Length: 111
Length: 123
Image (cartoon, rainbow over all chains, first blue to last red; front, side, top):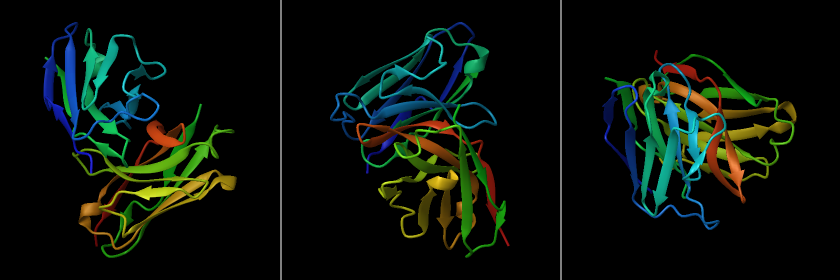
C-alpha cells in the first residue's frame, strides 16, 4: 500500500501571507503518461471536498491562480501565494497510482 | 454541470447491511467513460476511499473493506450503489459518491462529489 503523509497538520496563516503544504508518498507516483497520480483537495467546513489540483500540477476549473503546486517523485507541495479567508479548511493530498489513499489532512485557518 | 446525490437510510443497526444509492445527473457522455466511486469520512476524521467501479466491469475496493463491500452500476438509470455488510459502529461516517475521472484508461482524480450522507450505525 502507498502511504501518504502531510506536513504540517495545522497551519495558521495571516490574511495575505503565503502558505505551503507538503505531501510525501511512500512510493514514486509518476504515471506512465508522465504526469503524477497525485491530487489535492480542499474541504471547507461543512462541505464536500473540492478538487484544487489534479495530476500533480493542474489547477481545477475555477481555482484561483494564487494556488500552485509542484511535484517530484515522492514529494509534492501545494502553495497559496496570498491566503484569503475563503481558503480555510482542511487540505488533503490523494494518490491514485495504486488504488487510492489520502493523506491525513492539513488544517489551514486564519491567524 | 455534473451533479451527484446520495440517498439511503441514515441509521443502520449493528451487524446489518448498509445500502446507499447515488443518482448522477447532467452527465450525458461520461457514464460509460469514467469511473464512479465511494469515499467515507468518520465524524471529525479524514477521508477513506471505499471503492471504484466502471461500466466495463472493472471494480477495485479498499483492501480493508473488500470482504464486506460491493459497488454496483446501473448506468441506464443514472445510478450506482454501495452495499456494506456486517456493519459496526466503526462504519459510522458521512458517505460520499463521486465521479472518478478516467485518464488514459486509469481512474485519477475525483472531480465531482455529492453532498454526502451521514450514516450512523447504532441499535
